[in-house]
Image: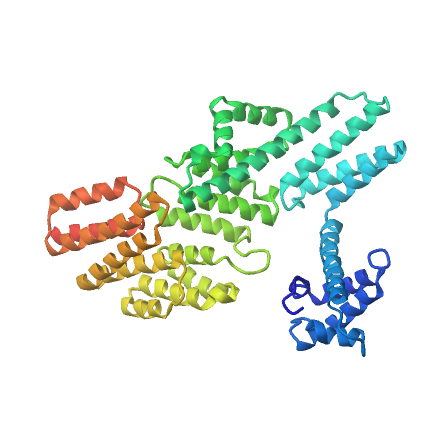
Length: 493
């Protein structure tokens, strides 16, 4: 039983949840088997870890049925029944807090019983409640509001038509509107996932149905027409739809800054419309659209830092469980260290304990390596790099690129050549699927190698050509590369 799904679930319960679950198991409405209750009361003694040897099936059996021979079948059924109660309890907890779904289910039941006065009164009450929650950003995701209003209007229209009370034509307008709003938002959310999948696994966009569908709507001005309609006929919903649409545009048109800036502005101006959870998803969309651009500007770190500030302003840096995503932590350290060392120091100090335990030590050492690099303590940075163990793919790339920078700063050509060859072999060995990322990462090493060559053997023409290429193309750490070129230009002059 120690490895059962039952105990796996129970280990996630808080003390208060265990108390509530006991009430749940004691309720004859949910459980009529006394031995299932006895099993839980025995298990509960070993909360919160549930790791004691007394929880082995045979040992637990002796506590429940002293003196009786162990019966595998009965014990298996008791564990199964208690496990199903766990699942029902969790579902009930979610349902209890889902005001929208509970209202709709109640109205559907009343509608089926054709209780006219109660249905009409409760429908009006539910509609006001849905709208109030919408205006106060109470929905975790606004798709729940649009789906709820769609179903509510659909129920109302069907009920009134069945009872020959249907008079208002605007009731027929609301349901389709909410259907379209909700559907498009889901499409835009899915498109973000499609882009992420394409970036991570090099999956072709043009074969994805979401890409094809939205592109067709965009090419034929359908999306623009819907936005124009919403702005005129449903202005309270326009900012929401516009924000999601601008995310789609920022993700799909990645060869300019126009749509990225539009999305960033829309998100900043309308952040009050969204819950913390939804803001976090939109914020992640902003980060993805930033990283997906085909160009990198000379003020990359400044732009990225402005996105980070949006995250802090809206208090969405931390996940709902109070931890920080390791990728987010790494990105913030990388970017902020190039802009504001004091900010980076404070961030590491305040957030290092919020990193998930399994990543904490490695990320702390890495962040200190980056911080010391920014302070030009290059040898100290290398010492911290050496402490990082069990590195994941992203961490390995970050460390290898950091090492290339350090060896250039230290003018250690031998160590650089060795590290650069190791990077190329590493990329080849892992079979990195995203070709754009392969080219970008290898090219970055080539640029630093060219800087080494030009420092050792100055050539004004070659330096000018290198500067032009780096300025015009997408590359990692463009600001640093151009700064190193400027340093070489000053030496020449």
